[in-house]
Amino acid sequence: MKTDLAKILSVSGQHGLFLFVAQSRNGAIAESLKDKKRTAFDAHSKISTLNDIAIFTSEGELRLAEVFTAMKATAEKGVAVPSSKDSPEAVKAFFSVAVPNYDEDRFYVSHMKKVLDWYDELDKYASFDFVTDEEREKELEKA
Image (cartoon, rainbow, N blue to C red; front, side, top):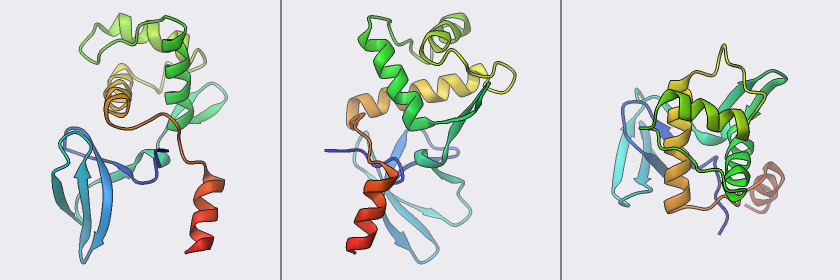
């Protein structure tokens, strides 16, 4: 099954990723990818979809789906994906292989660690076969 990053949420102040379930009167209802518990987030929660997030590179921005795909390809070549708990040097070394053109001045180690956490959670509870924008548009046309 494909993963739709437009429905995978990151909520500021909350650990882990959430799957969008429904719109509520004043917020959103989401289900934790990890334990499937549902939570209601109000309109004041800072919610971002992974589809809307990008990292800075020397050529501009690189969408998170492309970053995850590059990370997976690097891991398949035998390069170990570090944990977010690993040293900053190990984290930077991995990203210099996976995304060699990342912008060192604007893509910080703290950002890298967050991306590593998300990658790990997607690896465990979802797939790296992502829904494309074209597929999402076709689905909307059917509805």
